[in-house]
Image (cartoon, rainbow, N blue to C red; front, side, top):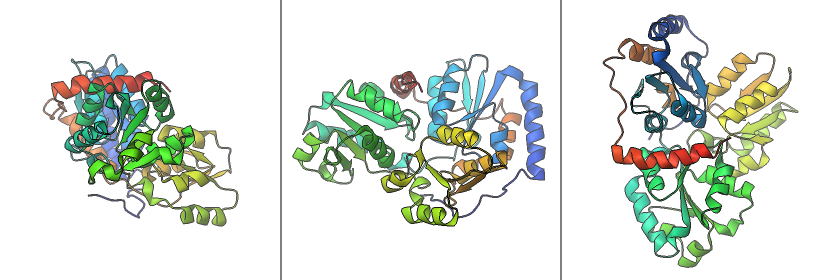
Length: 361
């Protein structure tokens, strides 16, 4: 399983060969006109991000895919779970392309359908399953989104997690949240759920490793899963940044561990973090706990502000997509393999994703 790398990604600026790729990408986009739209996630490399017609977090980009009116071809620069979600939400006459189909997500791989089905059955043996709302994080494969949609559940993102909890508790008594335990726990903590009403479900253990009484008492059941990028940050790292740079603010993503979230000055999605930096005054300092490509881009775009990572944590899967990949995709668009999703999975996953979009932010 791929992990994080303690390096600043190279190149740290748009190099000469990238400039050539970007120029060609712009030429091809001009040729295709409104037929093509490029969506680029915040964690993409600087050059790829610069080529996006729409940039944002997974929530914003899936919303863009659902609302794209004129484009027939959608090129999604992100990891697999984002691309399949876009292919689910777009119109039947639209086609989604992925510049690198090998760009996956280790967190998404921490939960699979057989495990979730078995866990759901075990939950049903100890609690009234109709009162359990399945909530799947966007960072998941499409069959898990389909699982949730078929059971009147919802997809959650870091942008709308609090509203998803509101939505879920309006419809049930318990939330089964997977696959990221940290986003789930941090949201439950902010929501005011008591600690003894939050349990961590280990799919490798019978009943997730819990007694029937613990399952019955729980209001939030968290899957044992995490993001390699965001669990890299620690309390000593935060303390070191504060000691080194007096007055610096600490801003982290909610996929970080709860002890890091607890001592941060602000917590939010990648869109939230980007807006936080934009609103900073010249000379202000911030250390950020999220993917290093995004932090580097913000530091380049805000040279009058001090913007640094708490430590460098790279998502190697996001980093797989290059301007060369995007250029190849555009140059070979008519023969590039489109993203295809199973019709049944698409039907039910769309329900869960549309519930997500209804929790507008």
